[in-house]
Amino acid sequence: MNKMQLGIILVILASFAISAYYYPSMPGRLASHWNLQGDADGYSGKLFGMFFVPALLAVMCFILYFIPNLDPLKANVAKFREHYDRFILILALFMLYIHALTIYWNLGRQFDFGQYLSPAFGILFLAVGKLVENAKPNWFIGIRTPWTLSSEKVWEKTHRIGGKLFFATGIVSFMGIFFPQISLLIVLAMALAIIVWSLVFSFVEYKKEMGGKQRVDKK
Image 1 (cartoon, rainbow, N blue to C red):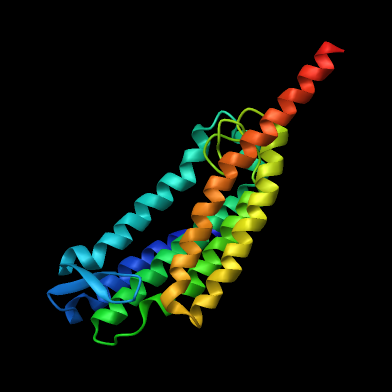
Image 2: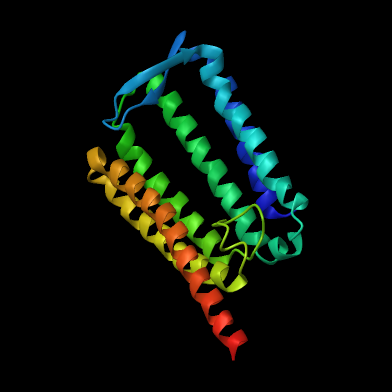
């Protein structure tokens, strides 16, 4: 077991421990969802609200950690496995942080949820950018379009630029500390734009590559 794996396990255990410790202090009805203005607009029962995130975190980490073993290209995953495991750890910490904020809010210490979420999203997107930039062709991790999966060159170009775009989104996310009312909207818009860009860019690059091969074949 390496340090990343141990860290993931400790984060999961910490999420359950925090829930168990604060459970007696929680009200019977917990705020569990906030809108873009930072106002609570969704509620859940005490048991569900305190243990749903830890249970989800455990299942999610288990799936994310073991699913590359099913990949026919798992030898490629091994080449960037350290980056992948680090991303899982950061994602787990992200969820633990949200869980802690939820508990803190329900203890009666209300605050601007969006403002506190912004730096966490920033770190998460920076981790996504690093992972994407280092990902090698595989079937489960990265920007998987029909065209990146059909060409190693298209994969490399798309992921090299895509990683930088996710990194830029992470930097913008930190601005939400100062502009919490609009930061999440901007970040969501940027993330959606990256998805659209990935489809268009990989398609165009694939067409260019196929066009070049056809010209070579004709000669």
